[in-house]
Length: 366
Image 1: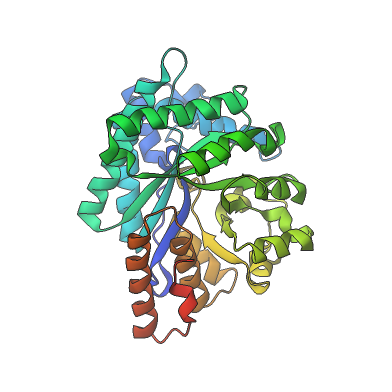
Image 2: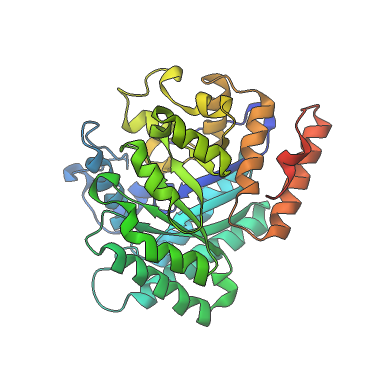
């Protein structure tokens, strides 16, 4: 499916949550399958034409489809090509800022992971630079570990080892790595086993920290994530809607709640059938700081412009609310303060020029 371009009212957009490998469109996947002579007619998770599919009754099946996409991106050049063109498409919709979640260990199996990580991250940094030069979009990378992998905390520490290795050798490209995130299947492990990993990422390496939590598990999963060192953002946080204490904590601690509408609706169609089924409106009404993300756009056929379009057309958010989502994503971005300040000034000018009334603090770096 070709991604649809939407940008309601031409509001500047920000994508606070997009997985690098899931940037691959159906067309990208079909091209890569042809490149590597992979027969999609017999594939367990990819149809001819590149469309990914999974069992909506089995959340693990979605992760299997995601891994099937990863398996086709076999070289750093594959990753660079997919990421660069995805950023260019996002910019064409009006996206000014994006954060890419990536492990850097595509198809790593055995041996020394350092060169694999280094080459993939060099490719991703190059994609960001080139897309920025061509379109003006700004993007950074969050290292992303997966909680469900058998390697557990040791594997996440290995990811940070690889980052330090690369940073010493290629500081100009490591500059784009500004965050650390925990993703993966929530049903397989608690995040508290990664406490030392987050402590190292935030307190020793200076990375901003975020965690996927409360997508399929109860609000207790969010509580656990909030206790991790350095956490300033939570991806999904859907189950917070069932726990007023968690809602208060997210608000009082000024945690950015990353909302991923199309992904939630696609993976859990029986749960999020109607606008009132999704907690984003309640989060907004309760005063939580919200950002929008496309998450896995190539897999579910959306785009960041489509997320903003859905937010206004389906969920009824005003231009001021949409602009606040963009501002929040920039305010809480894992990016240098000077860059955030510059982007926020542009957003404030946009609001003034278009008569969108917002508070000055909406455009201040916290």
